[in-house]
Image (cartoon, helix red, strand yellow):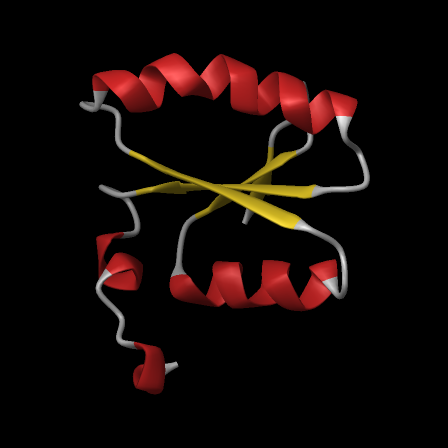
Amino acid sequence: MQVLEEDLVKVILSKEDFEVALKEAGERLVAVDFSATWCRPCRSIKPLFRSLSMKHKDVVFLEVDADEACDFLFTKKDEG
């Protein structure tokens, strides 16, 4: 898992990263941005998502790249 210095968004690279981030969040609200570099709307929302992470420090912000973590995206509920 990677935390970007300029904001509080945690970049999720695997299913395990996601599970750890959720566990660490505890009862806090979690906002997840599922995106891909080729997705124009995904690129458009990224600056807003990052600015929200700086404004709402009580919320956990996670970013999942659909291309980097594609195995995670296709995991069934009962497999995890």
